[in-house]
Image (cartoon, rainbow, N blue to C red; front, side, top):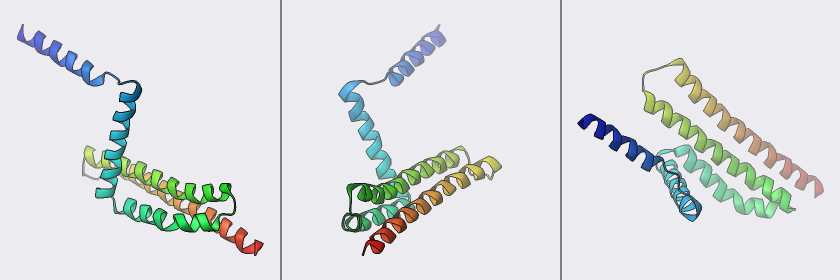
Length: 140
């Protein structure tokens, strides 16, 4: 009899935990989780801190260099994309590390793919910045 009530309690508790928030409460909870994620990235990921510093330092350059709102958006967007991909890569690494520290082919592959995504986002940012700098330089 006790086992049945424990199952009912656990079932009710899991329903309560899984109940989705709606409206402004949902937005507030989502914003809280997002800030928690950004704080974790700042505290635990040196690459995230370096890329955020790059964004901070290059934002005034983008505003000065970009001749149109589209160019400015491309310059800044490419840097924000690097941060987004870095966050996803960090999430992949955290999950893989949570599963286990022992070497496994799939764990290594997941981490390598995340790293490759970051590298491609950095190359894209460099390409965009290079194209805009070239365009501005050509225009005189």
